Image (cartoon, rainbow, N blue to C red; front, side, top):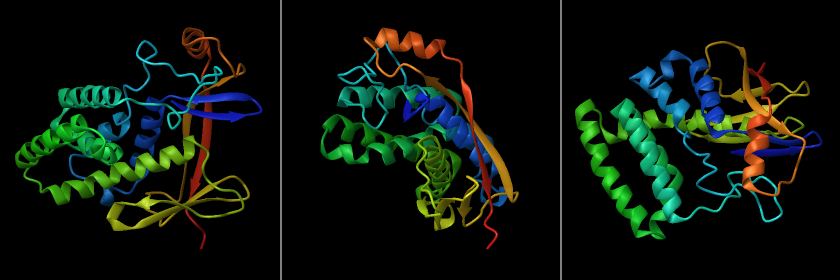
Length: 248
């Protein structure tokens, strides 16, 4: 889960909601940039970070009972492998194209773990073989398929920037990543709190995005069980943004 703090309390965004926001971003991008098998690609983008939160599986509180952002959580090799198996199986049940894109994404996220774990090295070696079969079925090269994956990576990164309030103040540019069409993308915030992405690859000159977040007044919890109960009982609120094309 994504955790932000403010004077209002602790803001919680589920990874599933972050994925949905990534899908909304993808849907605004001009059709000329869309990968093949568009509907399956959109599903992969929306669901690329699903099946993360499991209170029965792990603790989501720090030593002092404060909810942990996903970047602060500690993962064992077992946790990572189980999560990868879970999401790959779920994606395969829908579409091999979805599984292909998810496989690329997991490799992007966890590739540095190859040097630390034989289990993860083995899993990625297995995934490379699986991807080759899928690519043969779809008659697409690995190089071309990876360019399609860049579409997912762009949407994922923009969504995370929005969810984590990472856009700097005072019009300073933040690099999103180098992805779609091999271009490097940037985001900045205007004085009116509107966001500008450049270069512009969207259909319209301005659009709005929203996500559901839960704002908890309590900032510390005595147990995972208490945190889960309070979190699930909290009514979601909308967090919104306006994305605009630069006037320059």
